[in-house]
Image 1 (tube, one colour):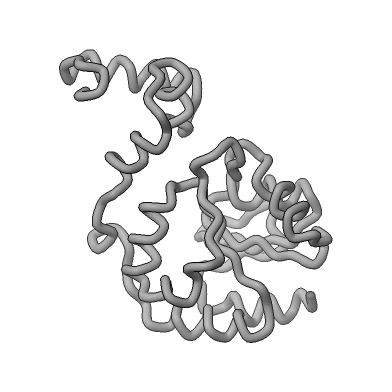
Image 2 (cartoon, rainbow, N blue to C red):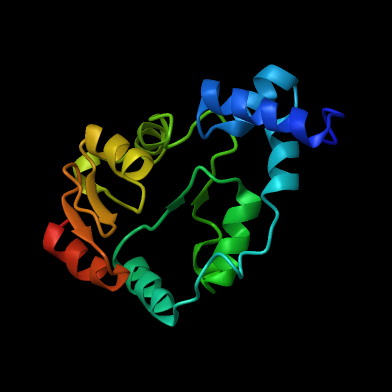
Length: 181
């Protein structure tokens, strides 16, 4: 509203239009249609406290610590870095992963299907030696699956694309060891 100098009703129309054209990629729509840089959008909209959104689970710290002993662990998100940092801090795992974050500010995004291919190229990785873990089938599982990356879907709903589906993140280490990567 402030950047476009419009009222609430007009800003709602803008958002509906962007959703129709760009889906969840609101930042791309604002940048292309209204010349509002993604960073401006992210810094203003996504810089929120994670406390009421993220649930702290002390077992997550143990899981990440255990995984890091045996594997290279990356946090790959389409969210902006400001949100990822807030979320990782709330989960008390930021110090473990702060140098291993790939955010969604640029033109590479999981939801666009190009982020995983970029990661494989940058790190010179073979897809069958990687595992993608995620809770969104469309952006976390399907793009990775399409590249031959092994996948673990964290959900109540079974995925036809994921190698494994689990409701409990504490099963992830056991599943990964079964994948024998």
